[in-house]
Image 1 (spheres, rainbow, N blue to C red):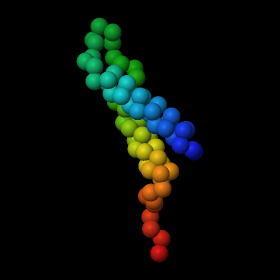
Image 2: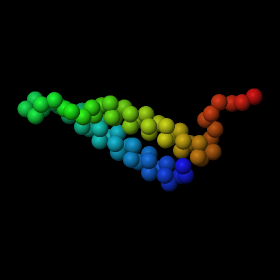
Image 3: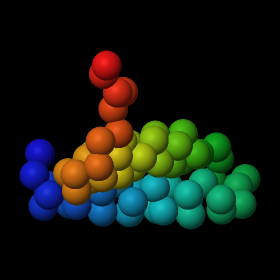
Image 4: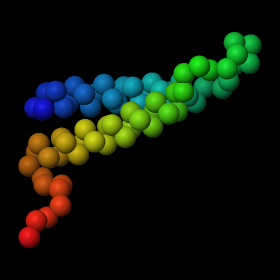
Length: 70
């Protein structure tokens, strides 16, 4: 992936994580019933994907994050 695709994917994952965190933090509404979307799990998966994208972005900038080979 090049830099533009990485930045676009990072922005999308950041938006997904923030939105899911906002929806997951809302108080439950017992009149409407239980929530059917696991917003906190989606938030955690979005944050994990964002970390992977950030590491890829750092690798694109020239920093080696892999294991050293002797």
